[in-house]
Image (cartoon, rainbow, N blue to C red; front, top):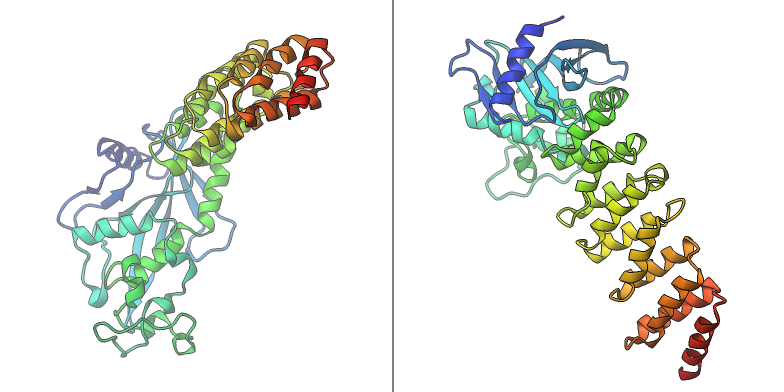
Length: 401
């Protein structure tokens, strides 16, 4: 397999470094590597090649996938070999771009003797490599919405200190090529490029977030399993976790490590991830009494927004577990506001209208909080409970209004 021994060594070095910057040597005798933390910290066992069918601006059509002995994808990379031009002169850019299995940027590697350069082919220093690594990791960079011509003023027209950046879409900027611009960067975009290397930054960023990223996500999805998803949901990177949660529903059973991994994400610390975790739960999982009970245990520690969402999710269960139903009815005593409304909506959806339960709920018609009493009355009307005592209590409530 292509470069298998080297890739084992590279990825193991990455793991030892804990996802922080790696630099082989101060001289140009060895490769330079700058990496972020991967999702899976496992040794590389195999390297696979895939043809990239989608058209993009990367000259070659080969995507390399690194896999572990367990068959898990660990990372992907492509070889970049293209011109980068400054002021009418060009040099070849030879790098390998790495992606994490979820499609996020993972790192950059330069072969022995290669380097990134700025205007006049000045080599990057260590801090500039680190900055490039940081910029390429920003999936929300404004570089997504700008052309290269937006980044720089017209050739030979350097902006004086304090001058405003060129207006976006200005016809004066149209038709410029990389050879036709100076190294000056429009001040508005200076925060998103390496100084003196705007074109290199721009091109590498668009390589990272181009069609290759979609292909990587497609390939990883083909390899998804409950075991791989457990690893993804344990990632310290929130974007990895979000990616996994969006795909976990098809693999989520009523028990097992993946269920626990999804449940662990239902917490107040990150509303977005907690919401995605709840969305990942499907009817098949909710058919399990044990799973419903696990969700019920989560309720007490959640804020009202997540409580409401989780209660709504329980409404999708084929039938409520008796213990869960009893606990929900009991919780009505201390519920308030929108949470109370969601609880009653759940009980109606699940057709909870037996005499014993309605009798217990009807006690709330005497609640000192008028909203609670009103919501209780509306529930009992809709539930159409025919118990005589319940009907008497409802009549007394009507007469007091």
